[in-house]
Length: 235
Image 1 (cartoon, rainbow, N blue to C red):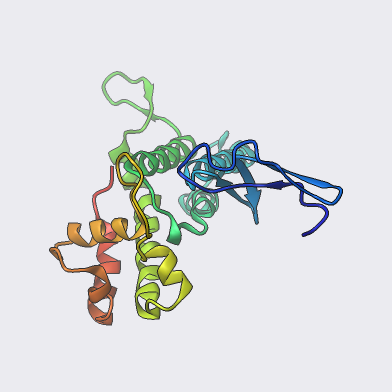
Image 2 (cartoon, rainbow, N blue to C red):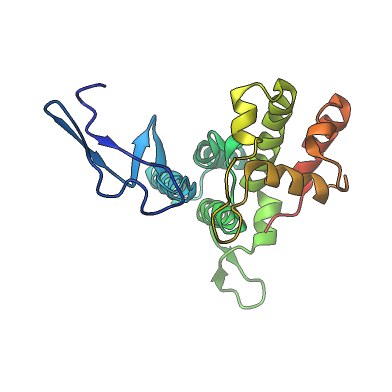
């Protein structure tokens, strides 16, 4: 083990797993931690994406702050604004193909996107009161014609899903994202899995209860679903 590594983490839904069990070997001691960064991604002992989402949104906000002065004098063209918006928002979705998000986390992504759009497009003067006000969500949709970040995330996840489905059960990526864990399930509500999100999106697009893995074998039909998911209603 690299001498520079001084910490380790146990990933389990059991909060007591590995607690107070620091590892000692030779003259080195390895402290157990609840979260750390690995290859730029925040990992937690609860295997939750929430902390990583927070980190991404924080970085996205910092990115906006670095270009905010461009919009002080309202000289930026629509094309220029669209470019900046994609530069700020799309990097937040890096690696989103494997995310399994709750509705709360998806809403957090939408709130971030709308906040950035409002800051870049600026306020609008009310025709009746002649006072400046913030843009409504419907007005933001008209101004920014590209798909919102939740739809982009769903589309990317489905594009990745078709590759996972065709790899088969023997491949590690299939077993990790689709395979069922062995042993007794822990108490409490079952955590939403990655393929649960795929099934939910497929059902919303009118494909009934047909399993998504079977659907993915039909290339033309799955391609149509990937395109259709961009028009799904999102919270």
